[in-house]
Image (cartoon, rainbow, N blue to C red; front, top):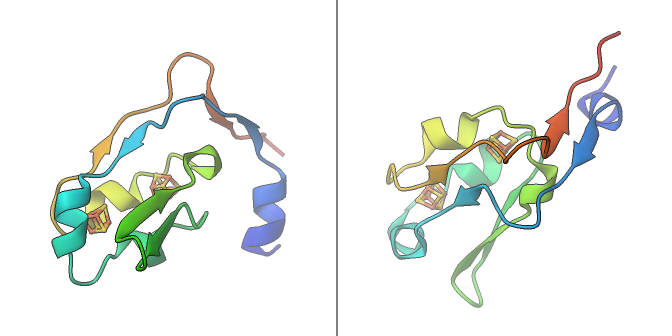
Length: 91
Ligand code: SF4
Ligand code: SF4
């Protein structure tokens, strides 16, 4: 089964506010922007024209990889509140 097919088996109940808060000042200074290629759900996109990190937090799988690799250790990462976020189905 491909990663794309596995992603279709997840259930999302996205919050209205992001649980992922990058420090844009640090992102602008971040050389490699590893969050933009480590995330299995492509949550982060660097907008070079506006020098901004776009965060598609609704797609987050809550794996925590972006927090670990953040080059500037400046990404505020929380679990979505209450019943929000992703649900992993068994089987
Ligand atoms: S790795 Fe961290 S500092 Fe670099 S762009 Fe991503 S969130 Fe910003
Ligand atoms: S926790 Fe995982 S899925 Fe969510 S944004 Fe970070 S790397 Fe992507």
